[in-house]
Amino acid sequence: MIKSWMVIGGVAFLVALAANVITSSDRQWFKRLQRPRWLTFEGAIPIIWTVIFICGA
Image 1 (cartoon, rainbow, N blue to C red):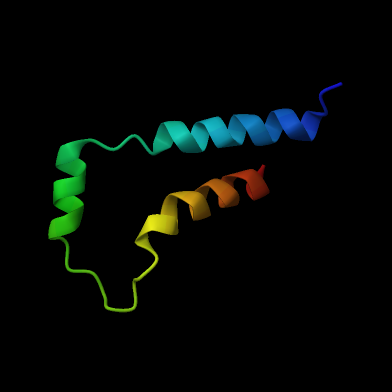
Image 2 (image 1 turned 90 degrees about the vertical axis):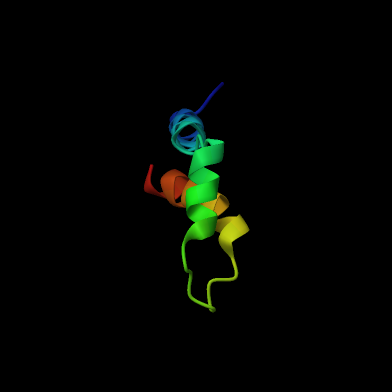
């Protein structure tokens, strides 16, 4: 049997994936930004937001 927290977590995961649709023009704009030197975890940002959405749900 599927528990309610599994459904909520799954929906939150799908919302996070849908919100992360990135086009090539978005990537070019992002690479042109001047980011601080301490920002070394850019690849993990989508994963971090997915975890935040799941925990929030």
